[in-house]
Image (cartoon, rainbow over all chains, first blue to last red; front, top):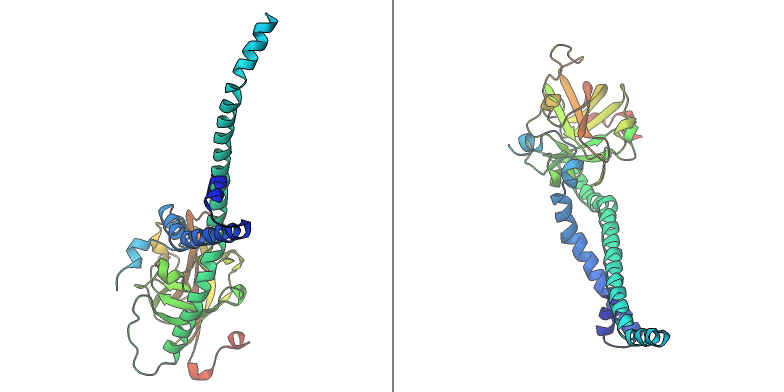
Length: 62
Length: 236
């Protein structure tokens, strides 16, 4: 899988390495910015760490 | 017999490696996928344990400036809208985490990420009733990370436009998330707290699982106008 990806990258080894690192960085940014906040919400992690009593009753209002 | 065996082996030989290598390739890809999944899981852990705190630290310092403006603002008192920081919290026992921590109106995720949240329908500091606060115990800034260090008799200082309010903690209890009574104006009708101007700190318990809640109650013992300056323990 990664060998195939590597073979598809253009240029000499160092160019490929730079492109691979950039791809990885872009993926990590995407994960931290969108995927993980969503995942943490879906898994209920942020709700369970939300240290409050009855968010629904007291969160809204006024 | 021997000849035939050899023949069979030699005729099977070309087919055998290709099957082998296909299996090996499949295993290799599965291995890569597993490693990828492991890296993703580690990144998610880093997001939860580290990045949410980094983000909260930024939001908390913004909220602190907002609270300082609200405290020094002139003019009549206005109702605080949800999401606005209106005060600062000081707990000497939790000094590493709770010192000039912004108090933000509201107890939902975006508000708790900026400091500690004030249950919007509970009393304001110094008022008769229950000034009830919520804070994260793990991740997202975790102001109440060391909630378990709190002891009866510990002081809690609140600074708002109306002055400095000193509360002394008197009682705590681990409760269920559905125990809404903890933030009632009078949480213990049959065994009331020493006075009717109280504070409640709430957080989750246990720290990393949070299927329970931990509440700590305190009572108002001193009010100082802003002009009198901060209490000695806060200014030190």
